[in-house]
Image 1 (spheres, rainbow, N blue to C red):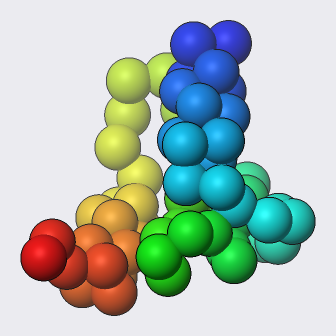
Image 2: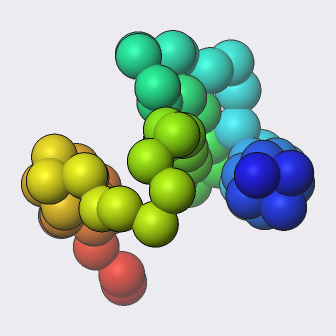
Length: 67
């Protein structure tokens, strides 16, 4: 968990993101440089994959296509 949070913070810093919006188990950093965004979701599910996670990840990548 600490590694994941450190990675989140690293991406937030690299992208120069502003204040976070928290929604449930997720934190989204907007107002990043070049229109970037960092989203981090955390849940106590062990090695299970939550079904809504797939949809959430897909929406994120659709909103931020590679150039």
